[in-house]
Length: 150
Image 1 (cartoon, one colour):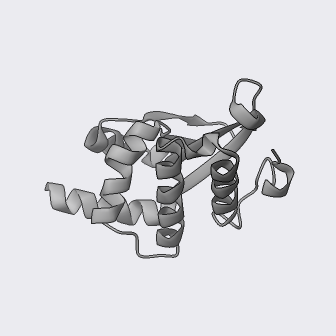
Image 2: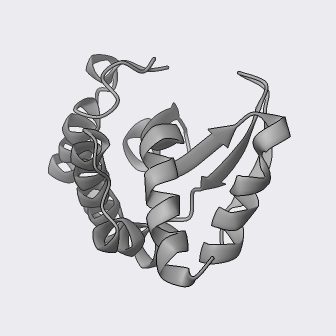
């Protein structure tokens, strides 16, 4: 498969099976008591998980691991540097066609706030929290955003 077809394929596949996510975890080591972690992931059943290797090979970043929560295999990128340098440019050049594109734009904004260390200010932290609330409305949240207070 040539590079152009591969890039369109990866976006289309992510449109159905991918997730842009921002998690908040309690932490005594982080300012305001919360670790903020953005990630991009794609999950697949083990018998069809070879596609995940294509993501890792194409972007030269991320990890592939079993996901015990739903017994699938997951490709995941958590590094803010890789998200900003590789993942975000990919989806800007090969946009998603579903509602997930709206979530991608919010995710992108959050990543750049984190990259610029805006989350280390009270206003910036609240901005990241409020933006993240607009993502994955149907997903379960370990910490509902109204419980994340600083």
